[in-house]
Image (cartoon, rainbow over all chains, first blue to last red):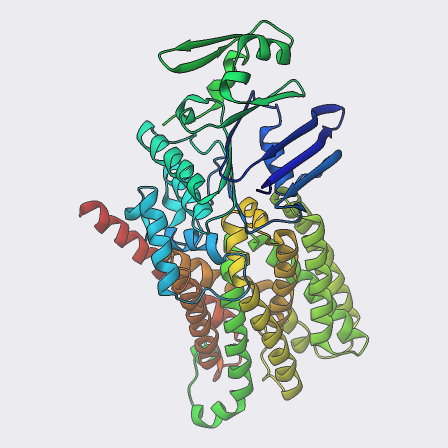
Amino acid sequence: MAQVLQVQNASLTLGERAIWSNLNFEIAPGEFVAVIGANGSGKSMLLKSILGQQRLSSGHIQFLGRPVGHGNTEIGYVPQHRAVDSGLPLRVIDAVRFGLDGHSYGVPLPSATKRKLAHQALESVDAAELATKPVGSLSGGEMQRVRVAQALISHPKLILADEPLSALDLHHQQVVSSLIAERRQEGTSVMFVTHDVNPVMDYVDRVLYLAQGKYSIGTPDEVLRSEVLSELYGAEIDVVRNQGRIVVLGAHDHDHHSDEEWV
Amino acid sequence: MDWSLVFNFTDYDKLLPLVTNSLLAGALLALIGGLVGVFVMTRELSFAVHGIAELSFAGAAIFLLIGLDVVLGSVFGSIIAAAIIAFLGERAKDRNSIVAVLMPFGLGLGILALSLYPGRAANKFGLLTGQIVAVDDPKLTSMAIITLIVLVAMLFIWRPLSFSSLDPEVALARGVPTKLLGIVFVLLLGLAVAAAVQIVGALLVLALLVTPAAAALRLSSSQLWVPVLSVLFALIAMLGGTLLALGGTLPISPYVTTISFLIYIIARLIAFTRSRLEVRA
């Protein structure tokens, strides 16, 4: 079966800094790839490149056999958590519906079918009760779930999720990650950016590890090993497995977690 | 003080037919002002409206001086200002400084042109503080054309523009040309400002392009009701202001701005009472 995504010799240099170079990988239909790496390793930039929003310095990215262009309705994108302007005259149900038709011109006329789909999408992220709330009134975690509903409603061929679990409590981390993982049965591929692989460990087919401008891709057992990561970082890295959890020691500087919000 | 200068309803039935054009123009203006205002609020462009208005005034004054059509001059000035703001002021911070630089320049240019203009003074300053005389047929036609363009274009871009106001990154990912839409919107805003300058004057356009939408946003967050209320409030202010001004000798703008302001105060009071009730319940 044809690959969903093909990344060929992709390099990105911003200013003097090589973010990553000569990335080569393909993603098959229904594959779940966790993208891991420290802050600044270019995880979000990779997603932006796949969306056609960040130009590569060299190389090619093809989605469904075509070079990536300016946006694509076959991709469901969950951006990194960011606050929404509180003054927006928009309710949650309308925001979710934008995942279906927000890109088409005209005025959003009432549609029972789209309304039903939007409600179902909200229910699937355990957010049915938010439907009539103004988007500006949501908490970070609530907004994150709404964004996931919005990205999934159109049944995209590829889901690009940038730290979708940040700002979520443990229960909703499980709801959201299993929901995204379920879509593999439809043949949907997933690129799941995360700084902690453990919440999605059960679903991960392959791991793409970005570090120091280099990368490693393969099954978790192939990549998440002390010698592989030590080679990537050029420093001593310990991968510890404890009761099914994987902890990478020495890879991240300790203070980078402090700027992440945990609710 | 003689209050009959402010409110005077003698011979009202005879005066009314004379302002049919003004009422029509006011209704058109309220329609686009109310709609455009919703996005002015959500995209934080209030200050830009003011900047565009001053350059619109300058354009109108210059065209008046050199004997060309005032509305056309107004549109000309508006579009130049809107284009500068749209292309250079993508970020709010840059935008504010650009507007602050443009505003006094436009105002000064306009005052220069007006001072050189040999015509009657009362008409001259109408461009700044609002018209006193009735809207003539050619002017009504220009206003109708502007309204039609703004209305059709606004309805066309409504949904993707809302989407990109909510979440520019996701909208872009789904193929919405967010930057282009932002520019198109500011240009449409320029046209709406040019129309507003004709009736309420450059200094007071905010009363139609911001206040009604601000009041509507206090009362609702529905994507249907906010624009509907905003247009309704703009209509009440515009038509009410024109009808009240009719008998007196004053320009319509103080009436329009006062009604607009009162609507905003009432909207705030309602929103405040509502939130108090919610807390109690």
